[in-house]
Length: 154
Image (cartoon, one colour):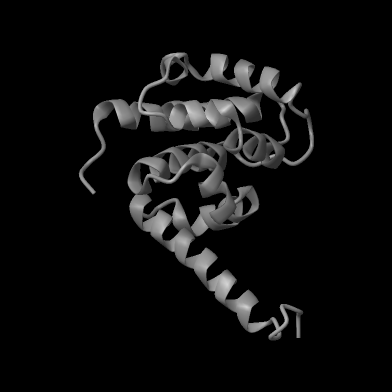
């Protein structure tokens, strides 16, 4: 992949700051991430161009809150560095693979991203994404091995 343009790197940063802002607003981190990644707001950021891309993280958070009928306060919290890395990496992932946010979340949910942060945050972002995709592939292969011929667990 060619290097990301300045504008795409800015959007990665905006999404990272959005995830930090959700933490600062006292939102449940895994629920926020799940809500965002399956939202119209995330789909707008996935688009080639949408006005929401340049609205800023505060406005995007308001849009998401309205879309889901209120984001859940309190609950599980992740450190600021983790939230930024997750948000940045998810946006970068879209540019790197062309996959949409809701598809990316199915491969690496909030729990997986939080668990992998310590080992992966120092990697090149593309390497981290490739490794996250490999983890998902290995989990799927393991699930297939654990099932009988009729789709029942052994």
